[in-house]
Length: 310
Image (cartoon, rainbow, N blue to C red; front, side, top):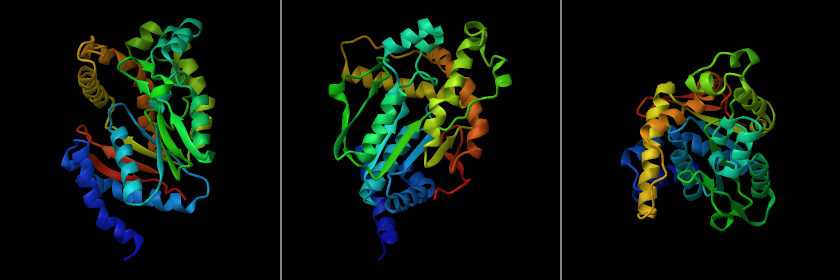
């Protein structure tokens, strides 16, 4: 029995175990076998063939399920394919609140809200990736507490072994290119119309996409995309995500006031992401290696192979 056959034989049991341990629906195991197992096997083969650990980007709008998918892929790569994987989330590299508040004063008030390009610590991210590729021992991975809207203390950062054979980097704006200047002129929602009438915020976001973010995305060895049906789905997905954050916070801090957002606050929050989310829906399918087109319930409609990483 060759390695591929062994992997296929072991995979169902590994998935069943993982679903129970993580309290995930059994249907996710079936979806993985149908839609994601083949791509995961390809990544494993690719990682074993490369001298430098590949950096693979996974892009998807808020609430699309990319974090769950990436963790599941990493588990399968480790347990079934014997590939050491480091998982990074762009969200964990948000600037601390104080730094974003400073940007809000010196550049534009909207930069106080985390999310858009310009609100991440790309120097920390770059150093982390370098460490995962070249260090011998362990590398510290930062974490960001969304409920508190703040980076966690270094003592709580995750420790992972290095070097990794494969690095998975997921984020809502991974791979998104800058827009043309003319595309910035018309506001896409009331936040831009009322709070960015002078175009300073969206112009700076676009400049960031043209600079350090473009360099980061150019360094990706492959790009995988979870494609939402439209922006309308994003709000519902993000609201579901916030409800889960609220439940987690209340379990961990039963005597503290819940700092997570209500439904109206989430509706306002996602407007910060609308421009680039819609831009990503239009542009990323042609820039990605693999694209999973999602239905409003996040089930997969079809998988498009637009270019296989080599």
